[in-house]
Amino acid sequence: MRDWTTGMSDLANKIGPFKPITLLLLISLLSCNQEAPLPKVASIDLLLLKSTSVSYGEYKVSNHVTFPTPDSISFLNTTLYPTRITQTTYEYDDQKRIVKSQGVDLDSIHSTETGGGSAVTTYTYTAQTVTPHSDRYPLEPSRLNSEGYIANGNTYDQNGHRTNGAIILNDNIIQVKSSNNLGFTSLVIYEYDLTKPNIPDPYQNLYGKPSYNLLVKETLLFTYPTGGYKEITTYTYEYDQRGLPKRRTAYSEFFEIGTSASGNIKSPEKQVVISNFEFAR
Image (cartoon, rainbow, N blue to C red; front, side, top):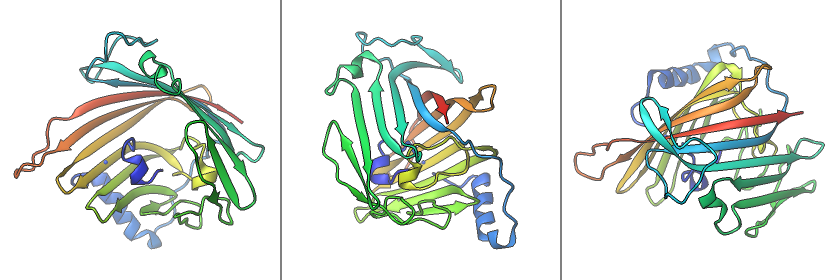
């Protein structure tokens, strides 16, 4: 989970009127002291080693761009075209802490940009700090709390979840809200499949435990003084023979909230991101 100042560009994170499922979650939250905790499925005791994602949009990119994928896909009766391919690999130390991440653009347009389409970040630890090192820009060390999480500007609950603006129910982050004094506000609602465990988060040793269950929907509303936008993303999964989520399809609809007096929401833009995962102990 990222805060809205860094994540709104890709938080790709989203709300209008509350949906019934959301209302049920919030009602459950209000009465949680009177309810027994939900039974949990076993977590995935593995590390995420690689994530490869292909993004598809409604418009073709420049003809000189090449992608090692089909020229188009059909999704929910809409033709979508590849716009970007990225791959991120992760390395860990013997304490399962992230020590290196490398992101690479695999399509021709982004792989020829400044930096060669690759960004590498490494992490070094002391008992009190973690220091990231980027091959693109300088980064400052961060102080760690007694649990080993980044303390700078963050708070955590007794289970290790970061609580900045968050509502947490049964070890799942179901809402995050933030705002600033310029009139910018974001509200994100998360919904889960309570029968499935979540995908391991490579950064959980730094920013706290992720939600326990598998994410199936995000709804974001981001507003500012002259307008805003709403984005709804649904997630579906394919599983390998071990029952691990090997592929995730994220389907997003992006609605720009107009600035006219009527406040109408314009026709949505659509995007699909298909991600493949590799795990290891």
